[in-house]
Amino acid sequence: MLSALIGRQKKYAQTKTTQSKPEVPKGMYTKCPHCKKNIYVIDLIANIGVCTYCNGHLPISPSARISKLIDLDSFEEFDKEMKSANPLEFEGYEDKIETTMKKVEQNEAVITGKGRIGGIETVLAVMDSRFIMGSMGSVVGEKITRAIEYATAHELPIIIFSASGGARMQEGIISLMQMAKTSAALARHDEKGLLYISVLTNPTTGGVTASFAMLGDIIIAEPNALIGFAGPRVIEQTIRQKLPQGFQRSEFSLEHGMIDCIVERKDMRDSLYKLLKFHAKEGQDGEY
Image (cartoon, rainbow, N blue to C red):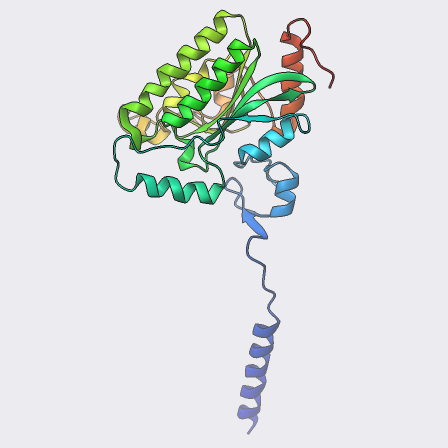
């Protein structure tokens, strides 16, 4: 009798615990890839995609980045409707493009345009690692080249935010050609004595690093960004040596003279404004 009563009490307690267990709505929290802690998504958005626990810089969309950099209502997007084709008839590529477009709600892995930072007009290109790892195909290369050429024709500075795994393998040699095309456009921009600021975010690798990302007059990086050509694991397997701690991260690159400075996301607009103002031509300096 007593054992039956205890059994009923345990069953009741278990049922009550199960029924009263709080359910966390899906999408309310996300895990930081750096410290592995759960972050309240609203706090993460308010902090421009920077972890509130460890200051880790998480990927953010180009639109979110642009909204924090550009003066209100001053951004004019270029080539918004451009979409990738399938020049090599790579199996499944078109479906992958369509699926990714719907997921991230944009047509390609870069947004380009012009706007003002503190009143100073500048051209901007912002890559998106969410779109097939920000890989550079023919459309990405074309959009960036057109943005550079616009800056050259109108004698404007250009800022490029890189976030990429490198060349897009589904487009083969056509993708690799974009390295030369973007670099040549930047050479013409440089011949006019115009400013190019390159901002490296996590990750900036492969063909993007080997072309326009490292050609900036001033090269800035976000904290702890992966910067390099091949990945650390590939390099270790090739040279059969253990790489130094922090190899290919922003801090290592700064220490070894590969970049000019590291700027946290919250300070990026102010830092870019100061650089633009310092290098502005007569009549281009704005008011912050």
